Image 1 (cartoon, rainbow, N blue to C red):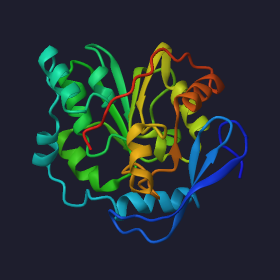
Image 2 (image 1 turned 90 degrees about the vertical axis):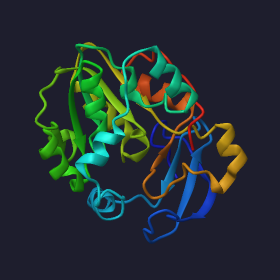
Image 3 (image 1 turned 180 degrees about the horizontal axis):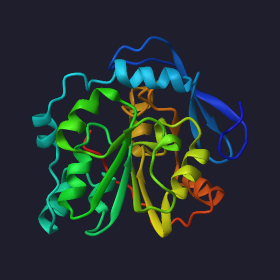
Image 4 (image 1 turned 30 degrees about the vertical axis):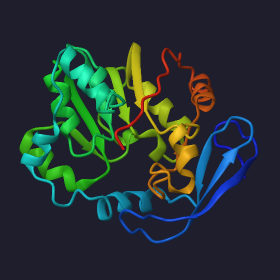
Length: 248
């Protein structure tokens, strides 16, 4: 099949994966491009199926205001920076925002990230598909749009920073998605994103048991080469690439 990023040839590297966490039915294969290394899961769910997937299968039906507040663990300062590095959570994108910035966290989950961004002295906004979060957002006064970024009421060139923690692997068309996000950035703005690395030691060590296959929720799998290609294709300057050992 054809690679989404470079249109090169993609071949199957793993077959017969299934959702071993939340029980979504079906079997899925992973195809990887022989040119840029980008990989994708097959078959891919439709946008309507994805929306239902996160609302019905992701474990957020029983979240509470208290649990969201407790999940917001960010603290400004060097001590927290060191702790998050030691704990393997430094790949959390909103930990890198600065005071005074206007920040959009795409795929903000239960909204704890927006509480963290506020603690960092920044102005927080979010988007999220899972409508189980909506009553919590209302109670906490969080500015979350529930739906697709393309339909969000945020004007173009509005944000200083856009964060995407473990998000890009979930979107159907990463090129179109990054271009949409770019439109929301002020000139000179920054996109900070994190995602699993298909070339990582953990992936090679674990094989088909790698935790980040996570089908059908994870659609895309990147390498450094493929993320460089994505930046070039969307006319973005790639300033920094870092690899963190996760806490999983």
